[in-house]
View (cartoon, rainbow, N blue to C red):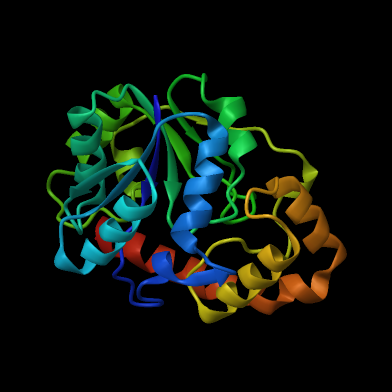
Length: 241
């Protein structure tokens, strides 16, 4: 078992956000790695072999003793598949590089479940990505071989007929006016406020309770949720067509 960060430097909405400074001397990637270590499994950075990610790899190599895997830029599913094969991974907790407030407790709680583990649509964005075992990843990989760009994995999960098991979450995690993913300048402002108040490894539940009580802070970036959602749906539509 392992934990895998999926991250790359190129982003149309916010280039190099993975190396963006968040609080004190901590960047996005620092917070991700520190939180990932709370799960208690080996940490792997799965990025691209493109030159633009040399800086990210250099930074991580200098500061952390974790595995760095470099693969295809556009074909994210192939990158995952090749990473699993190279390190003989049977199951992994997958975390998007955008989600620096992800809930490590949810991963710890659900790591031993079988199949493709996802979250319900009404879960707050940025809380949980997924947990994948190699057998199901292989099905998803095979279903996506006619596509060069597999950034959006949802269509291929459906196409592969992979059985999805959804995690159970308590009320604070259910959709409300809170957004915890990093795509826009307003998201950065929110994360700076969060981590100026909390330690970078603080439990997500505690952060959520704070945001629920302080709606003015959560409003900083929540209006961007529609922009983000529309962009996701647009990409999925392109794939399906």
